Image (cartoon, rainbow, N blue to C red; front, side, top):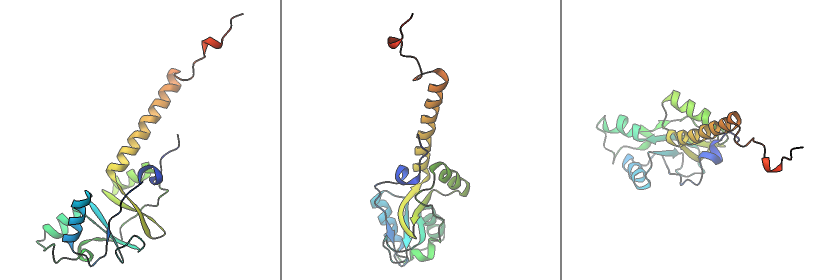
Length: 160
C-alpha cells in the first residue's frame, strides 16, 4: 500500500474557515465554536482565494487574549494571530507532517497550494491516519512472516 499524503488521504471534504485580519477575536471564537474547530486561517481579504497571512488558534486565544486581559470584542485578529504560519503542501507525506508538527509543538497547520488555503490538518488527523498505516504495515508483515496469504492452494495440488 502506498504511503499516505495529506491530500487526498488526510485532508478531504473540509469546510474551511477563513477570516480577514481586521475581524475581531469574538467573531473568530464564534466561528470556531459554531463549526467545532480549534483554529481559523487568516487570509489577506478573508476568502479562500486570498493569500494566507496568519492562523488563530485556541492557544492564541489563551495566551494572547485571555491571559493579557484583552477584550475579544475589540481585539483584531491581526493583533493576536500567529503571522506567517508554517504551512504544508498537499503532497506532503502524513508521517513526515506528523513528525514535523510534533517537533514544532503545532496542533494545526494550514495546507497551502500556490499561496492559497486548500486544507487544514491537525495533529489528531495525522495521528489517526499514520496509526492506520502502521496497522496495515504490521498486518502485511505478519502475513508475510507467518505465511497468511502465501500458502499453497492444496485443492490444486495433485500428488503423483
